[in-house]
Image (cartoon, rainbow, N blue to C red):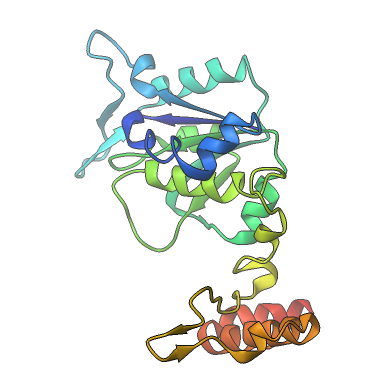
Length: 230
């Protein structure tokens, strides 16, 4: 998979992609992540990428020309399955969306900044708009890092144990069961006896029951979706 990301602040994405799972995925050749500085396509000597919004109001807007030139330059080299704009008014990211995007071959992400990007870019180029939730952060870079991580970890071969991703919270609209590790006794708090008894069938039943109970209690909205899909 190839993931291209357009941003005015490429340094914000150096850390997330240079360590842990995303680093290993790139080293294995399972994903190629490229960050593109929009200012390379800026206008004039000042490499301008933003301007005041028509109609007045506070905040600058990323301009059409730099974004269009950057997108079209990349499209000459790559055919994208999705061109994604990270924005608070997009569709809220969930596990099912990440699952679907993980099957893509090439993805382009556009990081908004300031008051966002000119609507004409959204209308003409963008195929999917994604939000992390009903809140606002300073720019789309952190959202792009989160989305990239959510997608890449699902690519076969990225995780050492590929079944791990299939048992994550939100798969099948359910929360994951509680997990425990050594020591067996921590300050008088014991690991549930069933988990150390060695009976696989009983352990799986306990985990299933815990998953259902936790989802119903903590996220009744997810439990309802699960019930409707079952």
